[in-house]
Length: 187
Image 1 (cartoon, rainbow, N blue to C red):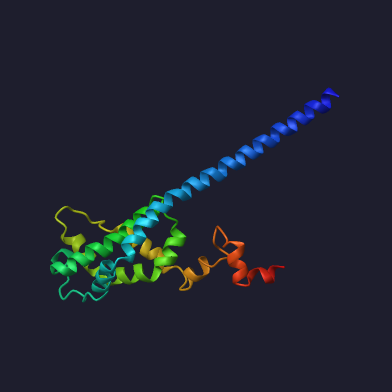
Image 2: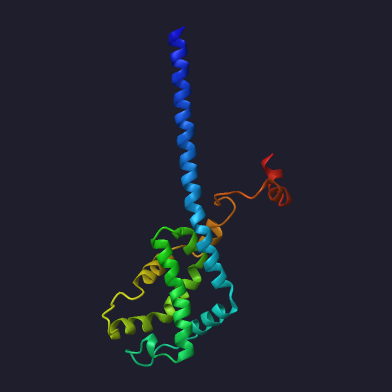
């Protein structure tokens, strides 16, 4: 009888350890994801602004430099301001990805076309700036360049595939799924 009680107590103890470990892992995952919310909120506020989109259009329309040594600091004021606003916005995203604050796969899938297009437009100016920089910063914007290269390797439809409901970590509510007719197929 004492052996049965001891075995039962051991099973309860093991069960408690499993439950508490599972809860700790879930709590850690939730707290890590909670850190993404303020960052994404701030980035999206900037991205939604008409001023940012105007600057983005300006950067995308930059002509190729007529001379090899023209860096972005040589651009006219309005173009330089647009350059700094847009390029350093994407540099901030690259930094957040590198720090593990943003999910690389999800973020790059969402901004792939834009980040690659911007880099293609500004690369000659960045290369010239690296050569002409009086502070010797030969790695200026290299983190952005690294993530642009990684984004280039993603398939064209990566955003659609990655952000489809099947790949989302949290599925839409059953109410939403009923409205979309999805649950009818599962029954």
